[in-house]
Amino acid sequence: MYGWKKKLLRVDLSTGTTLVEEIDENILHQYLGGRGLGTYLVYTEVSPDSDPLGPENILAFCTGSLTGVRVPTGGRSSMSTLSPLTGTIFDANAGSQFGVRLHWAGYDALVITGQASSPVWLDVTAEGAKIHSADHLWGQEIPETVGQLKSKGSAVVSIGPAGENQVLFASIADENGRSYGRGGVGAVMGSKNLKAIVAHGKDKPEIANKDIYEFVTYEAGKMVNASPRTSQGLPEFGTAVLVNLMNWYGVLPTHNFQKGEFAAADKISGERLRDEFLTKRGACWSCPIGCKRNTKTSKESGEGPEYETIYALGSSLGIDDFETIIEANYLCNRLGMDTISCGATIACAMELAQRDLLDTELAFGRVDLLLQTIIDIANRQNIGGELAVGSKRLAEKYQAPEIAMQVKGLEFPAYDPRGMQGQGLLYATSNRGACHLRGNMLGPELLGAPKMLDRHAPSGKAGILIVMQHTNAVIDSIGMCKFVNFAIGDDFFARLMTSITGVKYEVQDLQLAGERIWNLERLYNLRAGFSSLDDTLPPRFLELPLEEGGSAGYVVHLDEMLVEYYRFRGWDSEGVPTERKLSALGLEELGAQFMEERSHA
Image 1 (tube, one colour):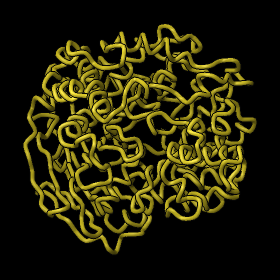
Image 2 (cartoon, rainbow, N blue to C red):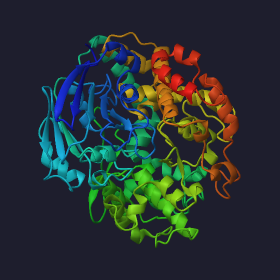
Image 3 (cartoon, helix red, strand yellow):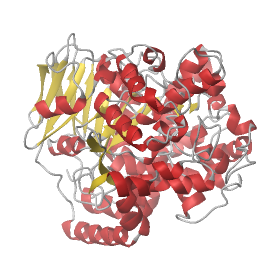
């Protein structure tokens, strides 16, 4: 088979058994791989009322048909599970070589179930998988673990102490901090007593039509080199290039989103990162863009930080000490924690303290407490024991749920939606909670890509957002990076898929696949008890205008956008996909269980 390998490797840690299964070609064609395949596996194998940290939950590492193929940014993969942080179906995406090696080992998916009785690590080869004791690795930070297990021709991902202690926003990462980062996927891995996974592979996917593949890849590469965003902005500054721009627009979250402008933005900017801390650029496998930053402070070196981390551990905390922000990023990478949720939860605690609701020394601007607080969270000690559950649970504990900047339990990324109406709609409707990677409206609302929209106008946002949500689902599923979408569009994705897999894909076929994935995720969340009431934002975005900066005076007009959004999606007024919509997407059988459960509710 071309592109896909048509094989799934299943490992049951409770029994110690492994099994290679064949994947139905129709499933691969309809869900593409990656996020789409993971969505299908979680939907069909994990009951929504399961304990996310119990043996019944799965970790589904899924590769796309383009993962490990020499196309621009063809080095990404996904993993899917039931999130312990949000309770939603969840997928996390990474540019780690682990996905490449897993695909080269011959698998479209690695599905891990059960729970080991003691710490183990997993060795995956073309022959299957072997389970080994990890007693000697337990307690180690991620780079140390990876260093002990990595060998030539292999790639390793691991959890750190945060995953072992089941911090609800723990991540899974490699030695460079390339992470399956959000939603507590590392906590799921830790609950299974699984410390690390090693993938050995060298059997690259076969190409159906090499001549067309080489031509389309060449043309795509030219487009990447021609785009100022992918050939200049991201390579020169990385994602941190956004700090000053977002501050100018008045959407750089400051003091837990109490403000949209940070007076010391210049001190934590991408320009300063390049001039004072950058040692060299880096790139994920087969990526011509090279947005990775290898950096060094006066004390240590590592990778990053990204723009989202600079907000979460910087402006949102009122901290402008860039060295400490960078070192806090290194620390989160080593301990295995999502920097966005970590910083946002600390910011929530700071505002609770500001309102005299939480007895803690944490306060906006307290740079001296940041590193120790991160250590305490990873080890669930001192104040970190309270913060390890995320901002939603923390704020609810102190009867102030409005202080948690989250949707469906997932903390906000680095864009204040009061200055980006479409971004607010994106956060509210995202199936995995507040997330900018589900159809980021940064392009059309602030950067003019593919065209410039009035960022303050609520009308007309639903249609373009839905298309972008579908395109993002496709990119996550085929194994490419969303940044490449700044340069190439659905037509190139369709031509690449056709040349590599031999299956004829048109643009509309990919949009249909993206819509199918999105709706299946929605069905799962509805079965888990979520409803249209969860398609909302924290009250401050709906009721409290920003008082200063480039977005002063605005709130998010969510209700009117939601009406349009549900209608355009073919859902009813309660945000439930209609039977007609499910039939059009080929989801009648999978949707039948939801419809039956709903009729008895």
